[in-house]
Picture (cartoon, rainbow, N blue to C red):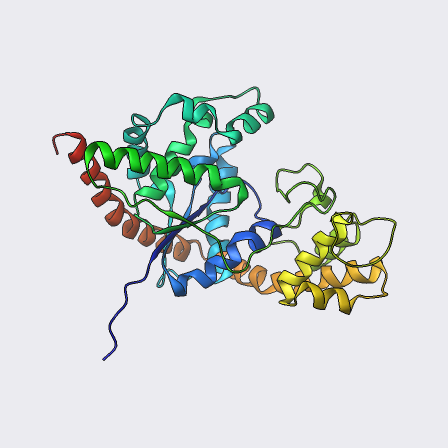
Length: 333
């Protein structure tokens, strides 16, 4: 007789702060679809985090709907995973206060993303921008995940969440699971098409630097045709050929071919032919997602039903953790 083996828990969140890119897809979102079969998965649209930067209310509201719809379009299944909108679970903000009182000012002041974002938004260096890693810690710790998928730019945030959890547990008793970083078996670090020294980002002012998940085929191919390469020729991975290396990484990720196979496929061929092939491969990969999205986003009632059910499911878990933490601290419940 086979025993039921309890799945490990994994949690991941994404902000609705603009159009999701090919970098988001290949770096993280594509793996989420695979993770929901392997893990007990929780996924959230982290809308509370979006307001550390000034947002236009109607646009933010639209982006929250759109981001949730994209997650569904990718193949995330609300029957397999808990999928919700962060602000629908008030325990995120409530636990954040508890954790803020167990986090040191010096820890927050050393966070590199605060320094970067303060420089970008010098006219609005708000307290939320300073302390949002504590809210991120609450996002994680409420659901007691064993693993949190992280990229290079998020490792510091997971480390602070772990430090806060360990400190709280040591002082008040066992409440939180201390999560480990999860490094997916597959996942590409996608760089800007115009400046391959920078990560692909939707905040880049150069529209040709990034590809949106929902871009149409003509737009995708046009952006890849304009992608930066070099004057040397030769299609192979090299530190001296960052633009070409980035395109090889992308082509490899969407076709499933190894880097060596890609290099052999385009040996002796020109950049024009190569860039067109990458653009077409990316367009083919994203086309079903765009088609699914267009269908899902038009049924607002069904979309709302799904994210409200997901929110109720998430809150049942979050409430238990939050009340346990409150009780340990000494509050009257």
